[in-house]
Amino acid sequence: MTDPAERDAAEEASAFSHPAVAPDATAAYGDHPDQVIDFYAPRDARTGAPLVVLLHGGAWRAPYDRAHVTPLADFLARRGFAVANVEYRRGPLLPQQGGDGPVAGRWPDTFDDVAAALDALPLLVRDAVPGADPRRTVLAGHSAGGHLALWGAARHVLPLGSPWRTPAPAALRGVVALAPIADFATATELDVCSGAFTQLLGGGAELAQRIPHADPAALLPTGIATTVVQGREDIVVPRAVAEAYVDAAAKAGEMVGLTLLDDVGHFPLIDPAADACAVVAEEIAQLAY
Image 1 (cartoon, rainbow, N blue to C red):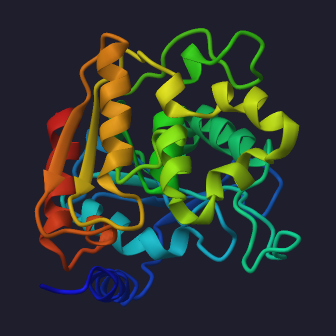
Image 2: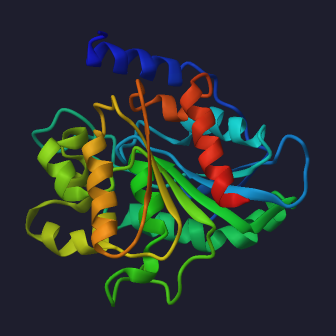
């Protein structure tokens, strides 16, 4: 049997081996350089194409930007989707004091950006991809981006007084979360991404106050169709995290789909060369059409 670490390294190398694909259009949703959205038109030039809003992963850390999921965006565009690839502010490049790598995320900037991007999308997509149908929007994200996708679809159930709370559910056909960091308690137990979510929320005394505003497992039920796609062999965000989220949804009276892929780790879900990527496209299509 392949060593799990060797498998993961090989899968990561494959996913990151594809050259970045330039977008058809880019629009800003704010003044910061990271507050931009890249748009990909459906390659068959169809009108009324479903819109996939894509949120990239990378543990909310600065070295990982939207470029690494542009091959996935192109993959989806070749299958008839319009794609909005969202960038957002992540952690600073400087390591946390006493740490050995970049800090994960910025509070509240990361959440400010995702909320602002989603709010701006209806107008931006109208000009950037006229052939897209915003009424058939699916929110998708991988890893930390999967967390943000689940969070973005749950803003209407955020605690009262939250600056990101919306008065009504987002106009979404659904959410497809790919190996998401979806349950913070389980992520803590497993030390997912070296404690990235604790860094995202700032840690310290404020952590407990912020979790209800950020943990998807605490923001249920949403009333929005949701599917989680997860590799059984994932050692980056283990399947237990996804399963904990699905269980939390069930306890809240909501059914969340869970698609477990055999012999698949963390990165094939965003790798156009992997069979898992075709499964992702199919899961999106089932919600969009």
